[in-house]
Structures are given as C-alpha cells and as structure tokens.
Amino acid sequence: MGRKPTRKQRDFAHAVVEGKTYAEAYRGVYDTTTENKRTVWREAHAVAKNPQVATMIEEGVAKNQREILRSLGKRREWIVAKLLHEAEYGENPSVRVRALEVLGKASQLFETREDRSETTTESDLLASLREKLAAVLPEPIDVTPESVAESGDDDSQKGGTP
Image 1: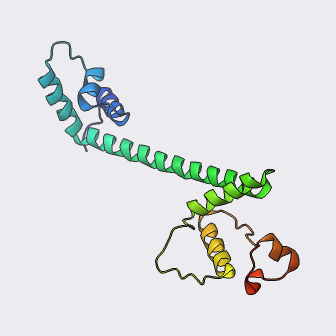
Image 2 (image 1 turned 180 degrees about the horizontal axis):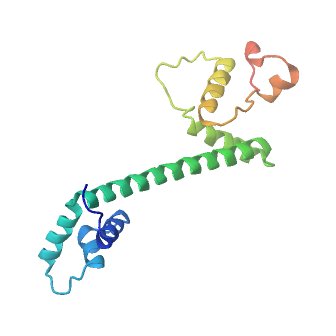
Image 3 (image 1 turned 90 degrees about the horizontal axis):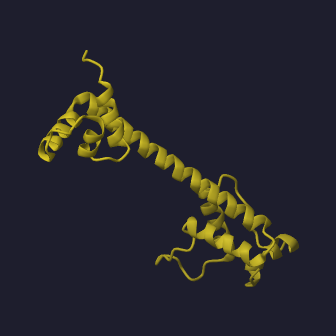
C-alpha cells in the first residue's frame, strides 16, 4: 500500500475542491517565490495527477455536488410547504389563488399539450390536478371546488363552474 498523502497534498486538494485552480492552490500551499509561472503550472498539475491527490479532489467535488443537490431538494420542499400553507390558510384570496397557480406550474399542470381534447371535464381536470400535486407534495390536499364540497353536487355534470 502507498504512503499517506502529505499535509501539503491534502491542503492542495482541499483548495482545489474549494474552487481554486491548480496553480492557485499550488501557490497557496507550496513555496513558489523562486519559481516562474510555467514551473508552478507544471508542478501544480503533477501534484493534481498524483493518484492520492486526484482521489481526494474527486471525492471532495462529488461531496460538494451531493450537498448542493441536497440543499436544492430541501429548498424545494421548503418553498412547496410555504406555498401550501399560503394556499390553505392565507387571509387574502388572491394570494391563495396565486399560491395554487405557482403550485400548479411547479407540477407542470398548465403545460399545453396537443393531445389534450377540448372536451375535458372538470372531474378529469380535478383528477389530473390531484395526481400532479401528489407527485410534488408530501401530503395530498383537497382540490375539490367549494361549490361541489358544500352542495355535494358535481357541477361538471351541469356544465357549471365552481
């Protein structure tokens, strides 16, 4: 088994993972006062090609990418939760409608499709909305129009709107 990477090699890899170029990382870790730019560039690339250093860089970059994805996923969940809360409990009706609109857009509910017929019923639209919201929300919400929920009638049979 090979030797452990030196402290300078670990520092170099860390600097590269943090976003510095090989030359910048090399200058930050090694004494380069007597070296010209070409030598710094050549030596920096030699250190980066060291199998142990290359592995540290690859693992560090992969870890950063996973953290970014995790952070984006958490941010998306937070935004959806805030929109849901506003849609369900907001005091201003126009804000509630806007929150529902944004949730619908997030679930790609309003994309135009050529294969969608013009005879789509309200119940079909409600079923589609429920399905799409279930795909993006942790818990389903009731999207039944108030007029249907209150009367128990299905206004789509009468051609009315909620």
